[in-house]
Length: 170
Ligand SMILES: Nc1nc2c(c(=O)[nH]1)N[C@H]1C(S)=C(S)[C@@H](COP(=O)(O)O)O[C@H]1N2
Ligand SMILES: [Mo]
Image 1: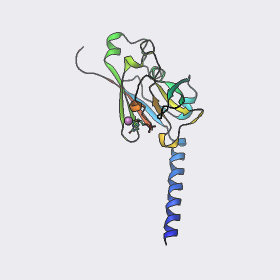
Image 2 (image 1 turned 90 degrees about the vertical axis):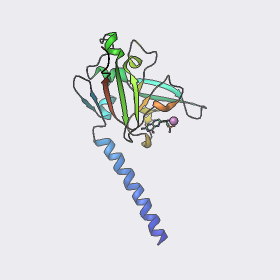
Image 3 (image 1 turned 90 degrees about the horizontal axis):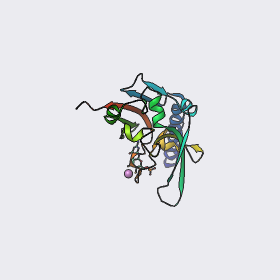
Image 4 (image 1 turned 60 degrees about the horizontal axis):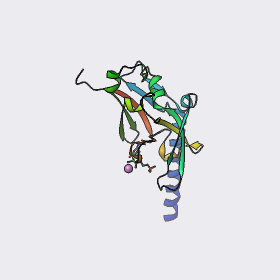
């Protein structure tokens, strides 16, 4: 009896793992929407076809470096008509981007800190780590913020980017 239930549990784990993998491959993986010219759905394949950036950051244990590869957030913003180079100072200053993970985790970036001409480092939406797809637990996409000293904003399992604008002031 105990053996059978162990077997069933192992089978369930395998089946769950397979359905997660195939769902990631098939469905449009993430959406960029909100205060944009037109919302855009991007698949992993779409992302691979865009201009790529890479960033290297220390690993959690601090004894090595991880190299992440993906697309800079300013380029993704460009692709929905939110150009951090064309926006005037007033407009860039009051806009912000939220990133949402499949577990509901949310992260905020001001547009200025993502802007091509504003920020020293590029924040990227990564889809590869050390030359491999991201580990399954991270989903298809993970934000990587090279300048942050803690990895809190490195949101994984990213499903949505949303552009907002503060509604107070001018
Ligand atoms: N989707 C999602 N991303 C997340 C989190 C989370 O809870 N959900 N936690 C953040 C925090 S607080 C940390 S410290 C790192 C942890 O990443 P690690 O487990 O790879 O070290 O992921 C960040 N990204
Ligand atoms: Mo954390």
